[in-house]
Image 1: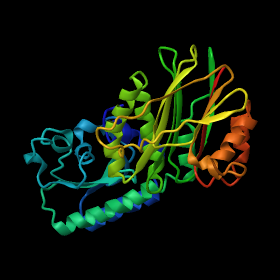
Image 2: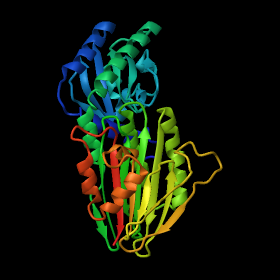
Image 3: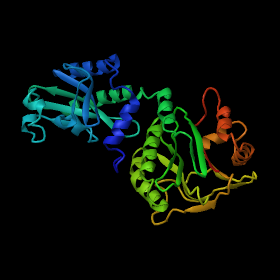
Amino acid sequence: MTNHLDGADRRTAVIEALEVLGSGPEERFDRITRMTHEAFGVPLTFLNLVHHDLVTTQSTYGFQQGTSVPASEQFCATTVLTPGPMVIPDTALDVRFAHTPAVTEYGVRFYAGAPLTMPDGTRVGTLCVMDAQPREFSDEDLALLGDLARWAERELGRVIERGRVQRVLAGLVPEPVTVPGASLDGLLVPNEDGGDLVDWRVAADGSVHVTVGAVTAAGRASALLAASVRAAVVAQTDVPLRDAIAGLEAQLTPDLTTAGAVGSLLHLRFDPRSGHAEWVDAGHGPALHVRADGSVTPLRSTDLPIGLQPAGVARTVGATDLARGDRVVLVTDGILALDGVRDAVGLAGLAAAHPDDLVDHVRTLVPTGGPEADVSLVVLTRR
């Protein structure tokens, strides 16, 4: 994972979530490249996706669909890095591309391309036109290419329908874990526009790391941003707790701000040998220490969500000790909308009443037609 969440790894992850690579010809894309050809009168038009250092032709007019070539040889690999269109009136005069096979072998002398941007801000490919003759591109031409690119973006975005988002998110939930002194289990039942994230892992030193969080953004951008946040959390596994949160904040804030999103998370590290746990709550909320005798103590913090903590104000590191049989229960707000829960008091009662089957019980509370919001839960038990 790079230090910039809008880099190549993020772009590839979003493209894989679109599930269009290798799907074969699709009229909804071919219509766009066909109309682009007619609009500009050029011999070649492409709808390309840029991933894994490759450029794959998802749809084309005048060339072979489905081909993949190294990104280093393609104009589109540069276009996808820019927020606006790229126009090259004469490719033979552009030192960046004059030596590439597109120019020297295929005779491409003109290029104009517009990046294709998904709702979370990730640029995944281009809609472009090429010609064997140098030519000029007017402001009206640029505007028309931009309009056609927005059409392509909408068609790509429709692929991320509810079922696929659910599969992507559900696939990010780890398998239950049992290690000497502790066990972990949880669930994430996604809503169509939800942005919850759930993660747990065992570090090299034997400590257990647990994270629950949520990203709130427009539409399905929440789910894609949540996947990026989870990846950033994983990258901080072996960093001291306070430094890890500071690093996450520096890494994530620009992307969340660009997308108009708000992110919160609660990250906990537990030593199963001593029972000692430390945690940081970045504006997230519901978390409980449920003791073996059924008593419940909330884990509380007044820290603000990611990017909203005032500059110079350090994150609060809380601490608690788990006796054998104690549990930590971490959830997202969606669980409070379930029947029988509804608020923090109901959550505490539910957790105390189900010492051994809380995850399975919560799963039965999720409505058949799906939850009103993502429902996420993690239970860490000291054995």
